[in-house]
Image 1 (cartoon, rainbow, N blue to C red):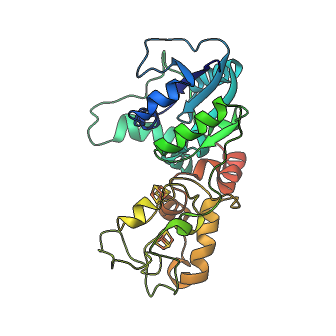
Image 2 (cartoon, rainbow, N blue to C red):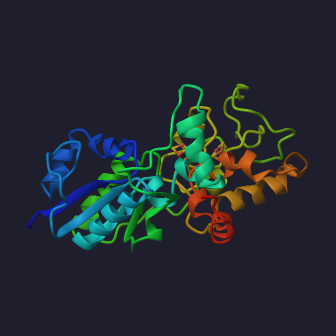
Length: 294
Ligand code: SF4
Ligand code: SF4
């Protein structure tokens, strides 16, 4: 079988998804029997995305006009374009900044952050900053590999499937379905913060922690709840869920209405929408109606 060409293209990103790819360790040798890596800023000195690449993985979401250009170039050159990681799939944690006016965010970062002295917002020779977006808002995406970071094993399996011309699938169940602590059996008596140690062997949601397991896509083996840490939803919405945060809010409204009745989007969005705010229905609405300050 002729090897397929594989490229990894980075937009606004800390490179964590790229590292998750490299985290395959010796399995990368099996992968390289099926694909030829032709572009990766971490392991190859290739500046331009080569023409006609079979599979392009895009890590990071869109934050600047430069990201948009690179993304469109990647789409033109890709036979199959895959969103790698939750920033590319859903906007990720940076998407929470869309709760704020763009100018206020720039002003805070460049002028008001405590460590800044006489800072100014850079305006010359820099790309225009735009609202954070998952890549599907700009180009057609053929497949998503969610996670922050994505699971290395899943990355490998999906690339191998695509290289063989097969259609890969993601798990359709929720994190609760693979969690040994669940399912939640009773309503929490109060909501708890993460610094209060949980009881072992008991569902975290049942104990009152914000655990996003009921609405989050399975595939990580529920690794956070297994370690006594609530799932914060990094794999995005489970397959039949349209809006991850709204679904979690709905779950909590059923079991802990009194605690969340004073819901405030800015305060709680980091719980409900930590990774998916930029692709949520509510952000869509804000984006369409917001008047941005210049
Ligand atoms: S601890 Fe979280 S993931 Fe596990 S069963 Fe409870 S709610 Fe679901
Ligand atoms: S348990 Fe939740 S936050 Fe942790 S890796 Fe899995 S999906 Fe991500």
